[in-house]
Image 1 (cartoon, protein in one colour):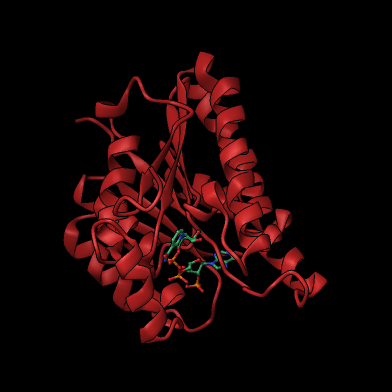
Image 2 (cartoon, rainbow, N blue to C red; image 1 turned 90 degrees about the vertical axis):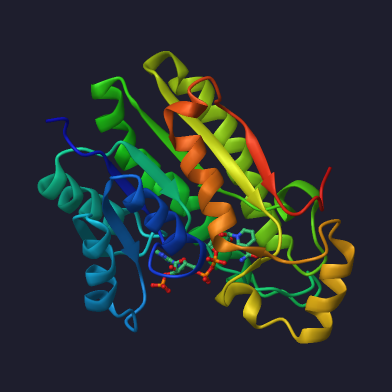
Length: 246
Ligand code: NAP
């Protein structure tokens, strides 16, 4: 019997990450799901994934902390012995106009969103290189492509992810490892929940498809990029934004 594949999803207990993890579970993967907060109901999530048929290991770790990521990978490999797909999804916003933005707001966002991608990816690639197989999908954002007032920190982190993705794709292509990114637009999750209804209305009218996206619409593209159907795609950024950026 063929061994089950394993996917590691950072920030996988809520929002887009949770839908990505679910999509992989439905595809027959076992899962390592990372999270950071204390209020995550791991038990009920575990049941949800087990019902789909996946073995799942939840690991609490702050992706901005290199040592925590080292410990996370140790646990992941001890339990599963392999990682076939890495999805760097964990991310936060701390929006403010640059005039008002505190150094801490800039550093925290870069630390989690961009350095977090370095911290986790650096730990994972030795296992992929050894197997001469694997793929990585990084979650960027349309604002990393086109910018957004009030998000200098966030858009810089997401633009950084795009540069990281393309460089790593060039480094690892010869080892049969593909590296791609997705750039979602406005997706309904906790992250966009704080926007008031007027802002959401205004945003929706500016989106050619006239609505915000759903987390599962991002998950489907991530699943495609990680699959053999995307075997000739590497170093690419796919916008999932209802046509916001063309
Ligand atoms: P969300 O609902 O706020 O979820 C964020 C996830 O990241 C949570 O699972 C959270 O873990 C995790 N996380 C935060 N800080 C972390 C840390 N230091 N270490 C490990 N995990 C951490 O956000 P979302 O909307 O699903 O966003 C997911 C990704 O998509 C992010 O990278 C975001 O930038 C990107 N994105 C979102 C949108 C959008 O409109 N929603 C658009 C473009 C891009 P806990 O649950 O433990 O707190």
